[in-house]
Length: 278
Ligand SMILES: NC(=O)c1ccc[n+]([C@@H]2O[C@H](COP(=O)([O-])OP(=O)(O)OC[C@H]3O[C@@H](n4cnc5c(N)ncnc54)[C@H](O)[C@@H]3O)[C@@H](O)[C@H]2O)c1
Image (cartoon, rainbow, N blue to C red; front, side, top):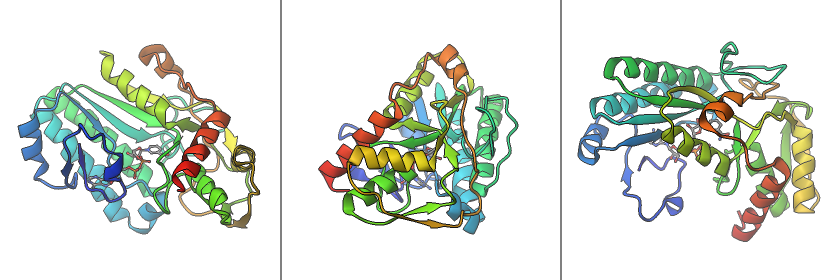
């Protein structure tokens, strides 16, 4: 396990895992790859904040594009059997009036999306250069226990944390903006299924349900059984308005389907947050 702990937490690491605190941009990761001789690599490390990518695109490029290339190159040089790269569906396809398939035109509206897509292309290149097998999983918005990191995280994580602490949430826009939400355990399942199949390629991983921010507020309020206090603010740059993914290809080839429905998933997330006081 390689992570620089910039947003990750060591307490969530499986105690059986061997851990290296290192930046994926560091040339020194080559020594770890040579020493450990990994069979499979799951590449999730990223700068994930869309607004930070707008404010500092150079940094986002360094981590999400070039850092990813550093990982893929080392996978190729060290004969890794397969790489599973976690990309983004929501940000890559831009505004969707119907569920986006893997063939939908790529229309990135933020540096984050541009650099995640660059990483996909670097992976494809490493596939050609080194004969590296890979799968790209383009994820919808992830949510679930352990997401809250004390500030910047997904909307369900922020709303959940605020409601149980009695804090005021901010709704950016008028509540009509939509997203597709996928539960964290379903994402882990997709990663394992991607590792197990022989196929390579790109797969969307989402629920196929287009959910508005207003619906999220209602679901969080209902699951928590508490008052949800929020104020409205103007929407921020780099945000798409409508986002939903078609994951039929993952269903057919990976045998993956979302197991968790949104409402019980939010309830589990809230129960976890209450138990940990997060
Ligand atoms: N959260 C979502 O809704 C969502 C949606 C689509 C795709 N993704 C992708 O899923 C992956 C995981 O995101 P997450 O939501 O769990 O975020 P996260 O911030 O919890 O995880 C990112 C991890 O990468 C580590 N990291 C960051 N920069 C690093 C660097 N330079 N070197 C080494 N480690 C570094 C962080 O410490 C953290 O552990 C990312 O690749 C992200 O782009 C997330």
